Structure formats: structure tokens, C-alpha cells
Length: 82
Image 1 (cartoon, rainbow, N blue to C red):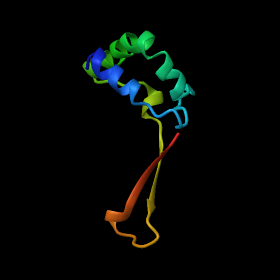
Image 2: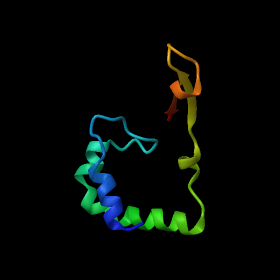
Image 3: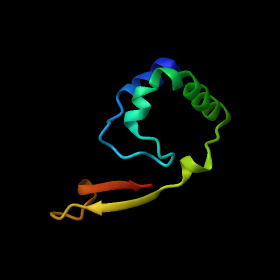
Image 4: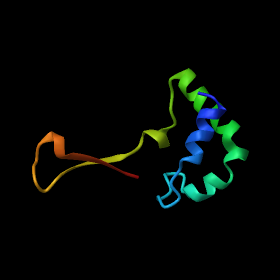
């Protein structure tokens, strides 16, 4: 995990998506990507090095939706609700 990886992910953020649990709009994160990239890299690296993630990152409501056509696993859609 380095600044290049984080910057690449920040640049690929879709501006039409909803904000995450932090309520920061993807459009805004894209605009300030260069300013926050290094700080985010440090946070992610420390989290990976220590094998710990914050409680906010662990919380998710996950819902399985099946296609109308078929209730088999190949038509399963996983949705994460924040």
C-alpha cells in the first residue's frame, strides 16, 4: 500500500455515488485527493500492519437479493447497506 495505489483509487471514485459512513461525498474526495492521499495511505498502512480496522469499517448491513428469474447462487446479488 503506497500513495500511488491510494491516489489511483481516489481518482477512480464515481462522483454519482452516495457517500460512505463518513458522509464525505465522493466528488469532494476526488477534489481533495492530492491533499489527503498521504494521510490516508498512513492510516490504511497502519491498519494493515496491525491487523486492525476501526469499528466503523466493520459495520455493514448486508442483504442478498436474487434475480427474479432464478433463485440460484449464480443470480445472487450482494448489497451492502450503510
